[in-house]
Length: 101
Image 1 (spheres, rainbow, N blue to C red):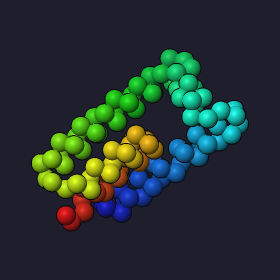
Image 2 (image 1 turned 180 degrees about the vertical axis):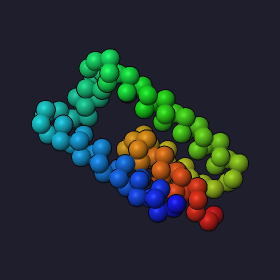
Image 3 (image 1 turned 60 degrees about the vertical axis):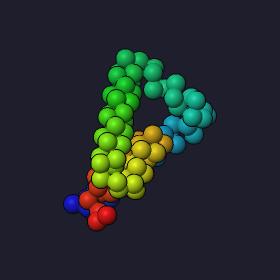
């Protein structure tokens, strides 16, 4: 399963980023414009909040388990989640969780 988690983490990092970069190129906006697009209508706002709540849940879980197991590399999933997305952070956490500490 480790390779599945790693493959999903890589896919979760690259695939969504392709669409973000494409959008920013087409619209001529930077990160601020991209962030504003997340709240254009009720559908995107709901999806945005869904991802924010998921990211917070993953963060709390990662911190809680890391403190219990003292396996500090697991915390790399937190910046991956907030800088890339839950689609990268969650499978990365599962990958790191299954490695031999």
